[in-house]
Length: 383
Image 1: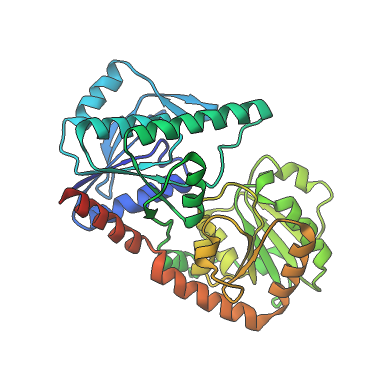
Image 2: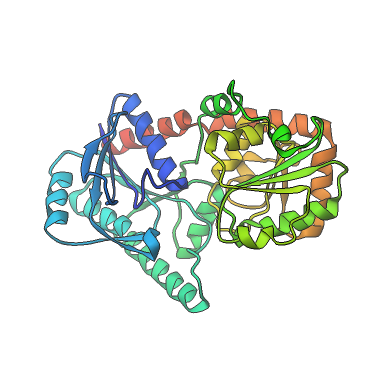
């Protein structure tokens, strides 16, 4: 079979949807099928290539709106040439990523016209955030229009978590199920426990037994990092430190008056971020962002790091109850401080939570498991 993946953005751009597309595509190839990724052109990259893992990549010309966050296909001679190459072959099944991209609407329309079985996998639990109230209103209106068009094309919807599927109901869409976000636990653990792994407590000047909480992600207001720092300070766990790994527009503001036991690390290479998780007592994500299913949840579980988070997408599937991890209704610093005290002081809870989330991860949230489900859907559609 040939499976075609539409992803408005793709590697080397790094993000959740990009990694989702790449990891499924390479396992489709590993399973003996052909994988074609259709994405947006980037400067310096060929419009058509096959990478080292056998994934064929087609990069369509676009207008890179919103600093590239919202690429829009750019019609013209180049587009028509690549379009003929794309649709001139046999495609057995399409996976279209995210409902709001113009390329997703294009893919859904073409699949409907050509009677190619397709599903759309959504990755968010909220509207795409803009920089002003007016733009938020306009963006939300556009998203409703896009959803209406997708329904007109008889698109089948899936979500990367149950939270995403519930959000799709906001658009009058009933999802058929979940095609979960995932990781390769063995790959994550190999990075986390590499022979040359950094000793983070030594790096931060901490005692070997010092309790350590970690945040890994983009430093934007919606991730709740400022609330986390206030809560950590209020928790006042003796000898404890908080390590914040990541970059973003909020970082400079957080550096002003930062407490001495809070370490703002800036951008950290991926292997070192996994090593930080493996050496921490708790991973904290008090987000109020429209998360579909944060990959960092799954990476923390693979690293044996218990999780403290808000009730965001994917948390209910991974953290069934408090014995798996702590889910808070909001990022309010008061309850967050109490939860931090528990997480950093209760060794028995941490041991149980780490074991349970690791077992749940292996059972349901590996790329091999998700790829098997994708191939099952493709085979059903083909037959």
